[in-house]
Image (cartoon, rainbow, N blue to C red; front, side, top):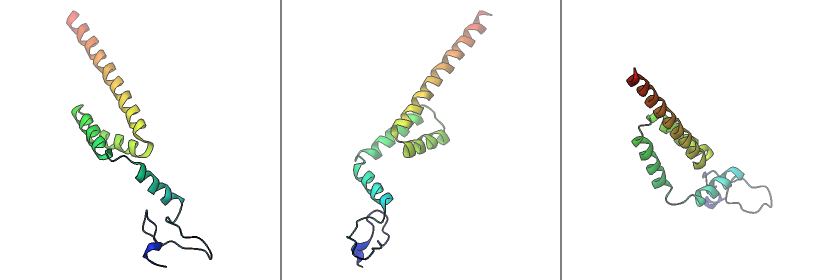
Length: 108
């Protein structure tokens, strides 16, 4: 076994059975992890920073931003975007309710 007999994703030594061909990854999970890393666009960091800046401008608390980032990391950007859309609709509903309440107060 040489240093080349290490998993390219996690660095663990790869164990072989007798007569087995050389592998690049220790298991399917590491192979998939490496594939995802190769497929990730180079602008991912910039996109994440832009998204976080947008959420901060909207005044989202850090705890919500962390949860949205975790959601995006686990379920993908589409999930985080969907939740952001729901939050935007919720904001519009709250704004409308405040306007209606203020209008009723002004009538009285």
